Image (cartoon, rainbow, N blue to C red; front, top):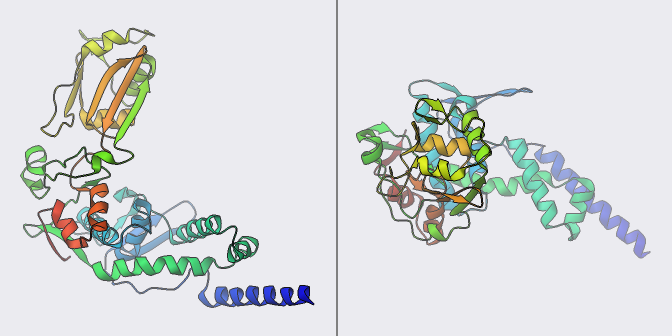
Amino acid sequence: MLKRVGIVIAMGIVFSALITFMTNGINGEKVNYYKTGKQVVIDEDKYKVTMDVEQFIPCVLMAQLDVDSPIELLKAQAVVIRTYILYCMKNKDKISSEELGLPFYSYSKLQDMWFEEFRREHAATGWGMLYNFTGLGKTKVYDEKMQCINKVMEKTKGKVLKYNGKIVLPLFHQISNGETREGEKLLGNDYKYLKSVKCKNDTQADEFIGMKFFSLKEFVETLSKNGIIIYKDKKEKFEHRESDVHELISMMKISNVDEKGYQLWISIGDTKVNGDVFRKALGLRSTCMKIEEYEQGIRITTRGYGHGFGMSICYADILAREGAGWKSILQKFYDCVIVDF
């Protein structure tokens, strides 16, 4: 008798979940976002989709932040993303996702990711076991997560950052080296809106310190693959050499830094490299760096994560957790007005 009752209850749960699934559909609840009239074209191998900028913003937002981040941080970043997209579009009505260069997740990918996360976290519960066994409940989990995103989009719809009446390039980064960089001094008058801000607690972030180790061969070959060849007296250096790191270090000049400690230029022999180009070539987190000889190789230690201009996501997260609203967070880093685009 008990076994029969258990079967009936289980069938009832499955039937209820199935009805929910069939009612809502595989893509979850349809949300009518505010429309900008500007479109992003996603042209992948298997499909081509055109969507309004407002529909695309959540796809980018979820590739940059977790849905469980403070909602005021999510709102601030949504405005940054919109501003960036419209800045790139200029007077065009359409732009490709490839041209934007922004990482993003499709809505179906978000649905799969959130459901897998839910199943892992609730594997030992009754609902978790049911979902793992049947795959039902996918839409329910998705809809619950999207409620937060919908609130973000509703509160910030159409808002962008402008300076002197123009949409700005809203630079941002993960973690500063303790203070963000002033735009006007380093990038010119057009970037005057980028403030220098002391970011408390950035220096305590888990990813604040980064380290990478290279043998001399790895160092030279990695730079070479990225178009950076080391020359000395008009001859290529270290082309056939396996060691002598000390000579390489002695050839380096890394004193050309800005007032915040970020490397502007690096000279190695006769080769002069822009700091950011050097960072990207070696896969470093920041241009705030220290280069030294270490155990017959090269150790590069970086502070912070990113270029240091504009909003520090790490400090913005702290501000949001301390009660700051999305507008005050943005105005902390950008000397801009927040207006409808």
